[in-house]
Amino acid sequence: MQQPGAEPLVTLDEIRAAAQRLRGISLRTPLLGQSAGVVVKPESLQPTGAFKLRGAYNALAQLPPEQLRQGVVTHSSGNHGRALAYAARLLGTRAVVVMPEDAPQIKVDGVRSEGAEIVFVGPSHEERAQRARRLAKADGLELIPSANDRRVIAGQGTIGLEIVEQLAEADRRGKLTVLVPIGQGGLAAGVCTAVKSLVPGARLIGVEPALAADGRDSLIAGEIVRWPSAKVQRTMADGLRMESVAPLAFEHMRRYMERIVTVEEDEIGRTVAHAARDLRLVLEPSGAVSLAGLRHIAPAGRNGAALDTTVAVLSGGNIDPERYSDILHRYHPN
Image 1 (cartoon, one colour):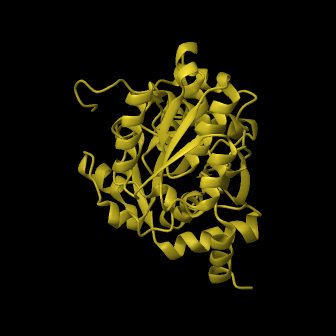
Image 2: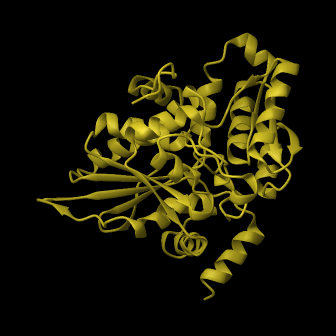
């Protein structure tokens, strides 16, 4: 059950409204065959290289004109920051992004390329959040979190809408399983809400690095469990180095998500290489975890005359070329 006094969960109507705002802004990413019964949805193909554009634009598009004149601020390891900067450029408003000093250079360059101002802090997520809150108060900026915001969750939920629509168009009628990566949980919250609202019998499974499994621990405990910043920094999946899931996102996960599985670093690296070799997709480690999680669930099979379908949401592909080359050489040397 939802905690007393908690903010209401995002509705399917909010997600459908977000889909209307995003027409002509975000790409309706395809479902690509991975193997019999398994398909992937590559959000790495979005204009900013990750799914975050959906939530960021949906949030900014609902701001009143007076707030757009003031500007917006966020804190991000990279993908949400670039998405917010991109949306701000389209809507003609100022954007400030608080980033960790160790953010991948490709993500720093991406934020700068959209014209945003960057403020660097240490690696802790909480340090980023505190600095963003101070900047919002000092400059009258609207703080747009990456997950703890119903407008953002609704935008990410359009991925779930598309999955259901695309499977119907392909006449796939078996049982549906959807795997989503877990960082702060905004993507999972939106996708779970959309899919479970439209296909109540679907299974929603989260995937996390074993080195940053605070979401798994939280779902098991029934309350948010925090991991130390130094502990989650160990994973190569820099976009998932969160100490805890966002409170609003967690309420959706508790309602709709079956479980969270974890993947080891070698599994993530091998999946990045597999995506390059067999799917012709460039994935960052954070974008590959859901595909790596396929090894930890029962394979899709036949449900009567219909083939069951498993969809892995590939969240992004923004990775420094040198790091990408190192991963490919290590896990796919030939």
